[in-house]
Length: 521
Image 1 (cartoon, helix red, strand yellow):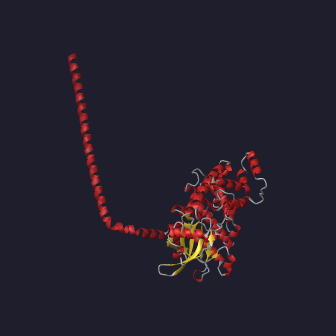
Image 2: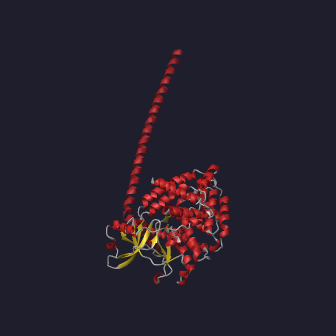
Image 3: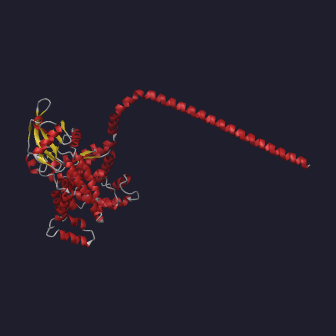
């Protein structure tokens, strides 16, 4: 019964915000259009379609808001106006009761909240679709008081998520069957992708592990601060971390008044992004302004502060090398090499003509060089590239979807901080230096250093291994020779037998012929 009520409410919201028009616009069945109009008499569709979709998702609740955020990353599937509007979705949802948060903490750690924390603020400081955050203080093992942030998972999320996901799958199948345009959007694949991300975010201990890895990776860069996770107080439903102090990166006027160099901050953001992607292959994939702050503390002045590590992107060595070569060729305007890389990686069918793909990529990218970021829309560039990719049947790689989303986040941050930032000029030296490191002598030294423990273990055994190999090889050769000689002897005996039988047969035949000739005389 609950599922029926939820389905009816979703249908009402769809009709209320005119989402049926998005689906039925290319569906050639007049009676269905007329039925939708009759069922939605009195509604107004003055707002743009993207805005109506965003408002509908907000009305449907946190899970649909999160779904809209994931959809906003699929610019290869969505029209630009819809993707831009969905990108505005933020995790600003009403908080749940502090009593429930306290009960969750006490259930997780099996102690009263006052026995865990020295102080605990009941009023949450941030509320998202998956969890909310409270500030607190606790005493560490040495008796020192420490300020912390406590992130608590929303109660009863899994059953709600499973029900809404089941409805989304049903709706996706229904939408996909309506028209060719709807099928091209691959709604079922989008829902499956959303399912994976959402279940990962439901495990806060996984988020804590992501943060710890990112903190280690960024230690030597001195450009970004990652909160320390307090592992004695981490649980799948609750994590406790170092409290961070900073100014939201969207408050540019306040940052400028504090003396922060916004142009340098924009360039540092590009460096952080490319370092995480190409050096580490492990990057913060949810870098919207709500998750990024800037430190104004004298000791760490001007550094980024990253928060919320539920969505992390990863790349293999092959992915990193392929992307770095693509970016480097792109910065050099070597479009032929970009086309060749697509063929070499198998992203396009083998029969694709390199010159045609090269020409198409040049037509998309060339107009955007030598322009400041304020005159460039990476979203538009990506959209045109995706349109080109569909023409040449390029396979969109799932592992790069989060990278596309993060690149667009970086574009938005850079545009707000420094509209004159030349993204390409800032990124090109980093990538070229990284490529030299990948193929230069330092790479060989690093590989030898990484393999040194293994080699150190093998060296003492090397003489014995060599002796065993040579001995085995000698014995193997001797055995093979003996087998060969024996086989040759068997062959010789067989030939001798055949010759003897043949000679005997011939002599007998000759004797018979001679006797017959004598009798005839």
